[in-house]
Picture 1 (cartoon, rainbow, N blue to C red):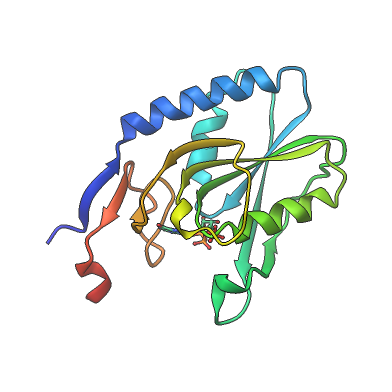
Picture 2 (tube, protein in one colour):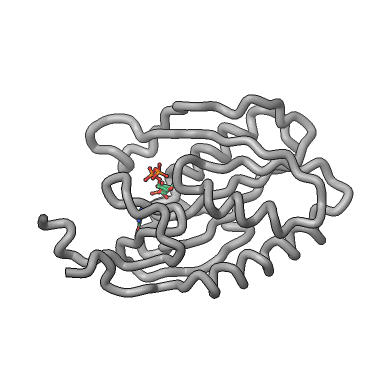
Length: 178
Ligand SMILES: O=P(O)(O)OC[C@H]1O[C@H](OP(=O)(O)OP(=O)(O)O)[C@H](O)[C@@H]1O
Ligand code: HPA
């Protein structure tokens, strides 16, 4: 049995989109003090690809968060596991995510970072799953809108695995049962 049911977004489509987004951000942030904050763990591959398409100087940092409690993400309360190390005061911030699902993680992160005096905080996400949204959130730069399917690859995991798959794939349901 194959682990992957279907490739949803191929590596070539991802590459092309990342180039497009990199060009857009390079134009819009020319001459500005920009820091990109990758959300671990899923955001690391997208961030690594994206910054290599930028033609402007950029600072990089990472943040790691986890949802509180057994009801997990539904509470919207987020705990910081690893904070960024640098000041974002008077800088332009872009939060880099692999996927936006309910929107709760990013809503919290955006509000939290705004308390630290940045010039602005924007959001870029490789994937958007709008069917699962619980809160309104503006996505400033977006890769692909996807259906309500559980996907892996390009940073996204199932049970901590499959982040390394180069394409965004729909997992075979048999995997959940085994
Ligand atoms: O919009 P939301 O419903 O808040 O979900 C999106 C978040 O969930 C995933 O992270 P996860 O908690 O699975 O951690 P990981 O990146 O380490 O896999 C994803 O990387 C986002 O950070
Ligand atoms: O489809 C998904 N796959 C992996 N992680 C996720 N976190 C939110 N949605 C997903």
